[in-house]
Length: 134
Image (spheres, rainbow, N blue to C red):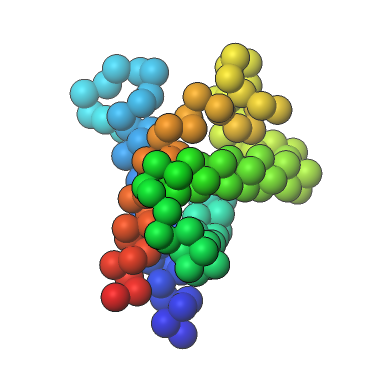
C-alpha cells in the first residue's frame, strides 16, 4: 500500500505545481495569481512515481542537466500520448485550447517552449520522490 500512497502524494505535488505554474505564467496579469489544473491531470501526474522508480536507478548518477533534459523529453512524449488519448476519448485534451495556434505547439498538445520548465519541474519532482523514499 505504501506505493499507492506515494503515487497519490506525488500526483498531488504535480497538480499543485501546475496550479502554481499557471498562476505565474498566465497571460493575464492578475495580482490574485489565479492558477488552475484539470481533474484529468491527477492520473497523469500519478505516472511520476512509477516513472521515477524505473528511471532513477538507471540515471540517478547522471549530472542534473542530463537528467533534467531526459525527464523533460519523456514528460513531453507522455503529454503528447495522454493528450492524444484524451482527444480520442472525450474529443479534446483539456489543455488543447490554450496550446492551439501557438507557434511552438505540436498537434496543439505539447509546447516545445515549455521544455526548460519541464526540466526544472522534473528535477523538483525527482527531489520530492527522493524525499518520499527515504
